Length: 253
Picture 1 (cartoon, rainbow, N blue to C red):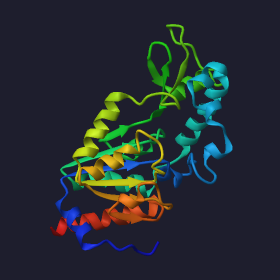
Picture 2 (cartoon, rainbow, N blue to C red):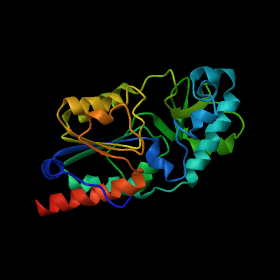
Picture 3 (spheres, rainbow, N blue to C red):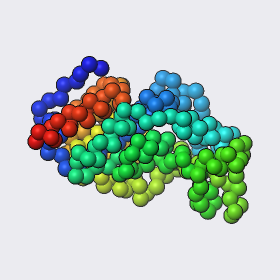
Picture 4 (cartoon, rainbow, N blue to C red):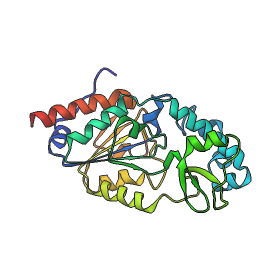
């Protein structure tokens, strides 16, 4: 990607914005070596989610699910934040209010240094008991019991602290994300196919509220027609460049 043009009216939004939100998906972590889920080569093209990422799958074969998430945890632990993760950390200093809402569970945003972070789909870094909700470090739980999920003191089994298909998002996290999207004046959607609800609905909330909406994704999404600026490029290339443009606009006033 050599360059991309930013219209003057978008630059005005960069200068005036007070409340910014970034909404990230698996495409952001893809450049750190982690698989996406949908599209060519994605995990759900090669594997069946109903056998690995549902409460029913865990009940039917907890060992199989546990070993798959142990592999995913190991893969995520070996990955490193890429330029897109690092650029989004800089947004915290550029706006009076900034919230990063992510669908990713790999922990790379936090490792990059992001603080105002909402993890809509939970985290791969922790395990929680399916019965009492007690939490513990997932890596330690896997080291203790690599083949089968360890048993909690209450008698329940530990599982990854992620949101599976068929489960509801944490209502407190979702509600805050919706509030932030509906009250922001600059919204960045990056690295997401925008097909998974209710998370994808945040883009529409921001659009309806009158925010300037920017989309960074190699392929168009169902919301591409609504955005004010679409950048068809990988996150690791586009987000640092976009961040530099915002910095110039806000520094020059």
